Image (tube, rainbow, N blue to C red; front, side):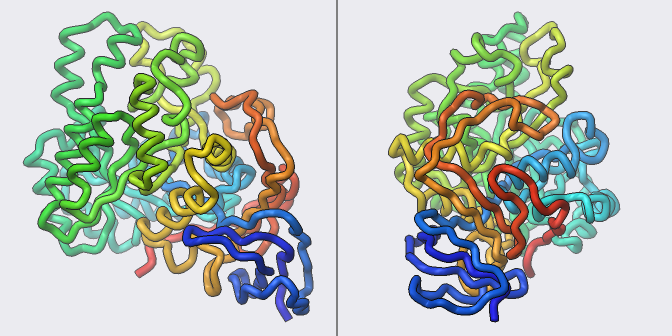
Length: 444
């Protein structure tokens, strides 16, 4: 006797599709049964004509707790994730304080318990004090994050020497290093040359050259070591070109975000503060290059960089465009925007699963339980009906940001159900089972 059987659907994994019934027992996938197999279960879910996807794993999200809960918190952020089909959120460490010590990470994990609607893994920041890292590693965060520009001095690794020395220190410790590429010298230089504070000055301060320089520094620093690195948020043609040439030199992967496939720098004039983030949006030719890289399979992971701010913060008048709090919500719209890319023939369903579920789970140490609909994996399952369209609206958004840059978009598909470890948590756009999430750690 199974707990639940989801029947009649097409099961989508990174490697391909199969028609079958998913049998669930004890929160895990117990069997994939042939369509005609009428096994017994306490609950039968009829998903005839729908597609089943493994729950999405967002490797780049800022849930803003502790210290910044006026922007977001564990409850609101994971509620948005659940409604968007993201069943595992990997939280970044840039809160207040930044998650840099074992005590801070342990406290964050404890605070999240009983308050999260989906599973959450935590990422910690690398500071210049290497003594702090030993205790962090013992708590098995899903990554350690290294920053090369635009962050407080205590967490800044702005030179090639600094990056290389930290990578060497972590060599052999079986920990993924997330690296946000940038070049502090370019940021400082452009600021002195163009102090105007307008959109043009912001774009000049973070050009494709800074991205490509930071990316190259990360890959070269890891070359010749056993360190695994993951390069964050690439969105320029130059960055993609550098990645194409250098990626085989190290154990490295790369990510970008959905918004980078749809917006250009020209959209700042229309949407302003709502779109302001870093890296800045680029020219149409950069968007075209990024889409081509996505279709080619050159991009390993698509995550959101969910970085909400309160409506009041975004609405405030700032002296310089660069001073506007950077970031936008994304957890609730990740699946929808990826479905839009499918409609536009940029990717297919298997690509969606590979880049937003399978690869993220395996790269960040959760591959035995997340990222696939397979026997033994957690039964984190999305039911998507491609016969029904849906619309993205601001009113739907439950993030404290209270808006989405994708408002008004019609999406070719509807997320009808979300299961977390075999329990239905979302039904037809409504949360039906609350705070069932668990804190997850890197699998040993």
